[in-house]
Image (tube, rainbow, N blue to C red):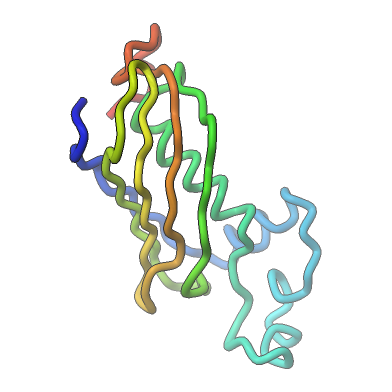
Length: 138
């Protein structure tokens, strides 16, 4: 692994079920994440994904690549364009920094509207960083 290396893309269909179940799993009961009528009344064309679901998907993206031995040390993300049902989010990443068994990865998740999420993830261990486990590595 070297600085500048690109991680493989991860394509995630943004379904109504994913949005609602992610909100419920993270105990985010805001109506804009499960009630389309309420979301429209508040100016949104439909329900949309919450940041905790996005955070989990970004974490999954990194651990899918680095393997089950990887540990997320820091996740710093910002939301942009909403993820609405029926769209697709494509996560991409590139290695920004390496220090021993620690990597900082720049992550972008884009949908048909634009960039849904941008940020960095710091990860240690794992298959590509000298960790003991190669499970789940791509």
